[in-house]
Length: 323
Image (cartoon, rainbow, N blue to C red):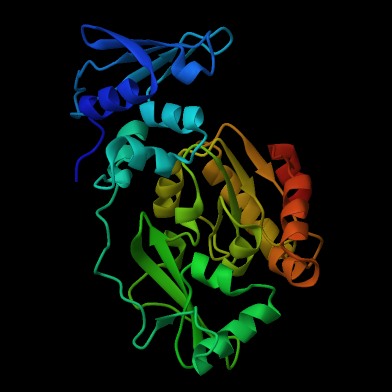
């Protein structure tokens, strides 16, 4: 699949801006009449570095907005007030490898997609039809936890005759799953996989945005977009690489407020510190998780608690919480 090209940039700019081309540069002003003081310079110069990367640079000349940003697509997302993924489709069309685009921007080595290597359990079907007896059983359990059919569809949950299946997607590739028995609190996983390699909810995190890290898939669903679940385990090199690929502007560690959660908080703080300039912590009340807040008080209460409890995470705060 094709990535971002000079033709993509030129076509998008000509559609949205009055531009004057000067060699391999585009000088832009007065975009769509929204800001008369808006002046932009985009370099279309292709100068591959030693590893073969090609950069397209954006320079914003507005007063108090002077930046030198290597990501044209991030500029489009901010200017159009859309998500990064929507900006990729708007500029490049549907046939684009988002994973490769991000890797090129952030200079991150990525593993090959695991498409077709992981399959859902036999007999799994999407949870979306309340008239089906097995799906109704799964929906009944989800309702008891505060989730509705829209949440099941959003996260592409599946079910079998006796289990709910939580699929893990990365750039629309199925990379992992876990199932929870409806007959007892028993979890199953695909054989030959390492749970800590994967992050539930990864495809609901926007590149360059805030990323919250919780323990369970239920907690990630309770808090919604830009929240991933690590499975309760400390992060490892593979999950760290995936977080770095999205380059979050801020990371919020939000484990359960118990001894195990605080232990993972300490471990993940030191692992994430080199990746993010800003690390925050947000804890639910002691011995209560985010999904329990959603179950008892609703989604707005869970998200409000998560956002209002955020505070800067420093080594002093880590020691205070974990010692």
